[in-house]
Image 1 (cartoon, rainbow, N blue to C red):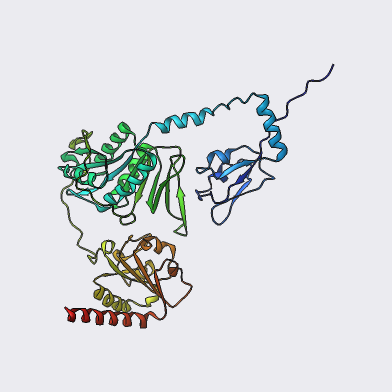
Image 2: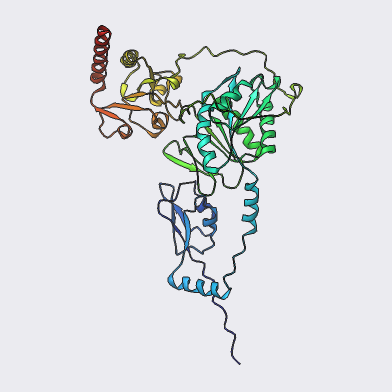
Length: 442
């Protein structure tokens, strides 16, 4: 009597990282590994120790961009082929958990942009987001929709169509005239629960940050704030890029298990789309699910902010910014002269604002304002990533710095290595001469 031959055990393989696929999502793979076989390097990428890997595949499943795969030796591949042949090539049964997740996510479809408005005037960031939203909707082969809330704001629907929206969900009632968190949150959540969009974009303004945070909490979904880049991966997930770890790296965040995927984006980060006055679309009027008596907060009066320098650097076409290299507050007067000649405004880096040389509303960067001027002149600014995030999309960047290795030169269209206290007055005088000559010619 011979013993029955046992079939070979199915090999599990070892996890390995695919080159140039990792997006530094935040060490999900390391957290999922039960045997501490994964460590992270300074770039946020996994270092996998094959001697400790047990082939549990947990890191593979948790990776949002499939940057990790299981590797097999030639002998293990031979065994896998034999097992597949012995089973008659039967399809592997789908994991019940993955099947349930796919079914849940499939119920959500469409890209929404929340149109922020004050007294019937839409925030420009909303139109910028419709431009980016159109790209995302086309990538997902899904509709692009806008959400308009307020009192007597139906006129904004036509503007939304002009900037690319196919459908506008309109909630128009006196209770929504002034922004109050409770009223807007309950209204937006009611819309989301009814129509189930897969992506919601909002401006990273005071209103947008407040509303997005509470809506994401109520809906139990993810929210990525202050995004600088948005795209869609091959699995349909929204790739949300933003500065992380104090602005020292750019991280791409994916919300792959919850819907809707929510992001806020600062004004002037995305380009303004062209307006089509002939565009039409569908207006879906929805009832407001909250009455005035249900709102705990009442608006008694509105006081416009009269403080600050009253200069909107975010909308300026010419910006002359100064950093730590300006040495003192009084030296910013030369930047004022240059800005005056150009018809622009003066900005500043965080170090200059922290030193008290310029007011906070002039700060450009991650913790300041994002700008997209035609010309940005950086004077004595080294170019830390926190600052670059706020001005890197300028049409032309001119950097003036005595340090030839300053990071600002990496994004500059033109660079001047020299003493800014000599370069700036000379530049100002040259521009004045050119303007005077042009005026005389006329």
